[in-house]
Image (cartoon, rainbow, N blue to C red):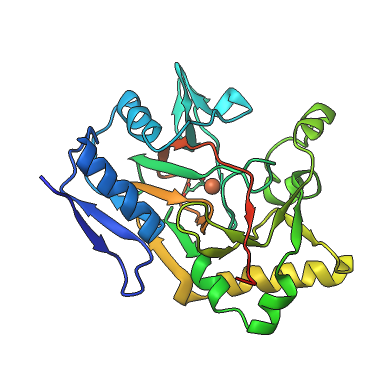
Length: 287
Ligand SMILES: O=C(O)CCC(=O)C(=O)O
Ligand SMILES: [Fe+2]
């Protein structure tokens, strides 16, 4: 049976996939429909899924090679492909990473090879709070003033976990020297070409600290301005989770941000599979 792809908004950012098997064991035609919808809409929402870890891994693997998150400590026991997010505990021990992703970012933006996509499954979700907000970075790029697009064309930004770890993860221990060596600063094009859609996205995020060819303080101010621009309401979709929801997003053309919930009262447990990516492509804006 063909799936239905229902856009979430008139501008086409985000779509809900309706009629999929709850374990996501799709035949080839249905899978191709999902993949095409993902490139067309950048984020896909699935409802009422009932996937085992194996089934989540099997579905995601059809989209490309999977990435194993490091450090390994937040990955599900026996399933290193599943990164656990949230405050769930088993036997008095945290199973996942708490307060991950507070602040707009795309996964792996601080790595030389950022992640192409991520697929987050709501195993336990609180009845209130804990939404995830997504930003459409194609539209954010398109809406920049032409003079600013010209100024940014061809420029790269430096992303630094080393400089900002303590800002974004104040509740975690400081990076060790070894972790710093493993996560050196990286430079990525700000106007990023999506390898499949060919479209240009604004590629910036919470780990960006400097822009090539722009004095440091001025660059920081411009990064803050670009981040604020991308967070304007017209570029956003806010997902309020129900148990059994899953969202597949494309890190090459979207950003996302977790929001708080009452961690004393509620358990939020999310299982994420993550796709390997490619070195970001610089958009050829002269074309
Ligand atoms: O928990 C969330 O809503 C999102 C966390 C996040 O940034 C991620 O899983 O990549
Ligand atoms: Fe994230």
